[in-house]
Amino acid sequence: QVQMVQSGAEVKNPGASVRVSCKASGYTFTTYGISWVRQARGQGLEWMGWISAYSGDTKYAQKFQGRVTMTRDTSTRTAYLDLRSLTSDDSAVYYCVREAEVSRVVYFLYWGQGTLVTVSS
Amino acid sequence: DIQMTQSPSSLSASIGDRVTITCRASQSIAGHLNWYQQKPEKAPKVLIYGASTLQSGVPLRFSGSGFGSEFTLTISSLQPEDFATYYCQQSYTEPRTFGQGTKLQIQ
Image (cartoon, rainbow over all chains, first blue to last red):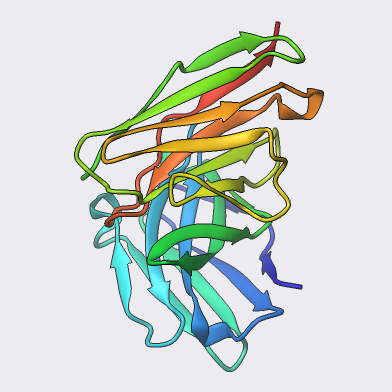
């Protein structure tokens, strides 16, 4: 079965960087894109960006441009989210999501368990 | 960016009720609309994709409709496990924006 297993919770100081990993299993890694979605406590879902597991091409939400980098390692079937210059507003649960596509409709089918990132001095 | 607006933001209903949630896009997204259910402390789960296709394993009491810029999610007869927060999302273009969510509570 498909699984997306994320790294553990992180506590960071303001101004620091964080890396969240997402290890995929149960499918051919390079076949599907992976998106990253975050959710601040008590708030809604926010799409951060996408990476093609095949080519490594990325698309980022404008809000995060210049502060986020998404990469993947095909040898270990792992996707990474790097977020820099953290502020308290970045405190949230971060999810990796494997996409699916049917008749050119893309949707988010397999979600990681979420990684809590807390930014606090 | 395409803005997604859900209504209502919260809703109280009883077991067995029929419930409808609306999602409007700020521009046409054809049929590229997905619905997710999220329970507390859990990752979201897709219910419907492509506006009206039920994801495998999702109960038949869930249905979706719409095209263009207006969409609905209907639950025909509420069950206890349906009390959750529901999100719409457009996948027509990036950024793949979500609605703000509709919290469905027990009356």
